[in-house]
Image 1 (cartoon, one colour):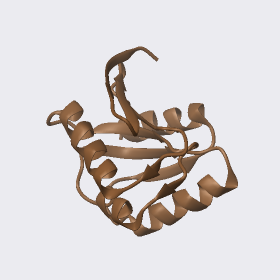
Image 2 (image 1 turned 60 degrees about the horizontal axis):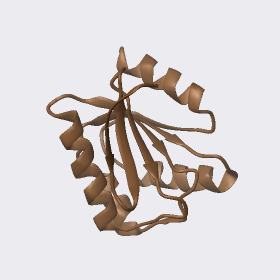
Image 3 (image 1 turned 90 degrees about the horizontal axis):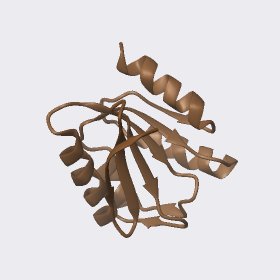
Image 4 (image 1 turned 120 degrees about the vertical axis):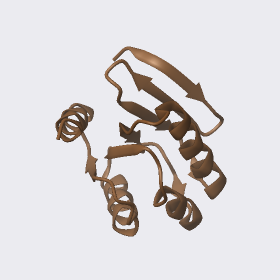
Length: 127
């Protein structure tokens, strides 16, 4: 992956690679609150401009996502489709909870393999 543009904050790093896939990586043991989610969405929308882009969210090292943050993630943004990447059964439970609560109109799925997630994003972007 060649990174075209990267933005860093205290809680996350967001980059867009040369294929147009956004990569959101949360800080190790991040506790994600509504303000963090709002900053991530604002940054994501700025990177997207006026165009939808696929998003790979690496959530393998986060500690917790607050209810308010989950609500923010359920709101409008220019990322679609969205692949959530985790490493453990706990990540899977958290991701499926977030996915079930998230009623935003965008295709989303949980993965434990980065390669499979990127293949899925590419397939769903070309649809």
